[in-house]
Image (cartoon, rainbow, N blue to C red; front, side, top):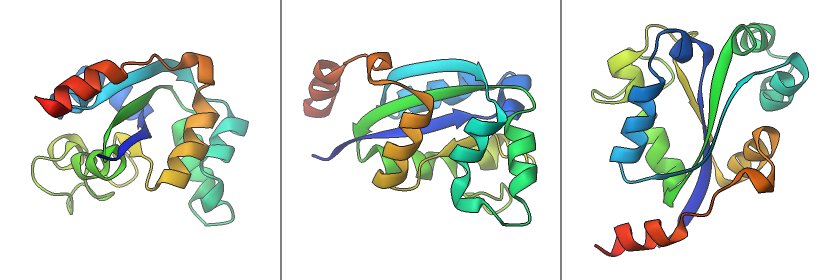
Amino acid sequence: MAIERTLILCKPDAVSRGLVGEITARIERRGYVIIAMKLMQLDGDRAREHYSEHSGKPFFNDLVDFITNGPLLAIAVEGERAIDGCRQMIGATDPLAAAPGSIRADLAQTIGRNLVHGSDSAASADRELAIFFEDKDFVSRRHDLERWITE
């Protein structure tokens, strides 16, 4: 059993469209545990740090502008194979290419307004979680996870 932590962001378009409840419900219905959550307005420095792997690419400034244009919800999720499982649940970056039933296929409109972000690897999850949360922000629900996995 590989219990992982990952970061999910409900981007400003998800917040403004009132889809945060739908997205968090899908996370929980899938069996993952939310161990931290923070509604926040992201500043430019933190946005540039979050998207640092895209620095220098033509779309970098658009990413930063979009993610800072309204409040977002940062969510720390824990569960068995949570990184790949959450990415599958989110769907492909392009909503038209996303698998039916995924968040992006069902709810997103365009690549540039695709509602959610999910860490793509354990290294990314560690780096990204540290951008949005401190250790004290995490609430241990390990006992819930172990019980749900064995049932």
